[in-house]
Amino acid sequence: MPESYREQIVPFEAGDGFACNLVHIQGPNPPAKGPVLLIHGAGVRANLFRAPVDRTVVDHLIDCGYDVWLENWRASIDLKPNTWNLDKAAVFDHPRAVKKVVEQTGWDKIKAVIHCQGSTSFMMSAVAGLVPEVTVVVTNAVSLHPVVPEFSRFKITKLLPLLSGATEYLNPQWGLHAPSAISKLVASMVALAHHECNNPVCKGVSFTYGTGFPALWSHENLNDATHEWIKQEFAQVPVTFFEQMAACIEAGP
Image (cartoon, rainbow, N blue to C red; front, top):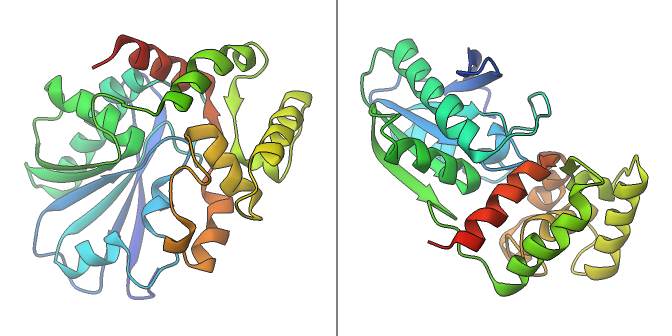
């Protein structure tokens, strides 16, 4: 983060008592425009929007004069591990986060940039009328209805039940440190199936979240620093999330 930026952690309590927080980032000049709330996906954290590249979306928003807020909702690896699902985030976390930004800034209307399962859960909040203060939403990667490749459907509907009785979480970090028998088994499966790079967490992300080698990005679009940075930005995600996604996929749009 540039030395001229100011960062403040603003805690808030979700509606069911779970402790979340917001990261408030301002540049050297006071923001001339209103707040923008950025929301990360599953098994990552607010820092996802600040990769080691020359210019991030946070930099761009600050340069454009916006007041930038990053939400760490219950899926964040910076918070206490918990068996969350999208419903809990939609009903409790996002509405409270929006209200906290409104309360802290004095603006009654804000904008949101939402990513992956932060996008899915936030759109659930929006269509349920729980975030009326948000007037503009930019959604990325997925929105209300997950559409996945056939192999992803097979993994989440057929392979997941084999793991769900043995572990509460999956974790790409197991490629670096596998503390249990089941984590060692999963790490071995990843090592056998994925040979696209030498980053065990990168490969663990592909195994955990999708189909492809890699699944979520193209290596040619990552600089070396970002590829290494991935090792610290992906961690535990509960099986309860994948069980809910399996039910959504089986139900269809």
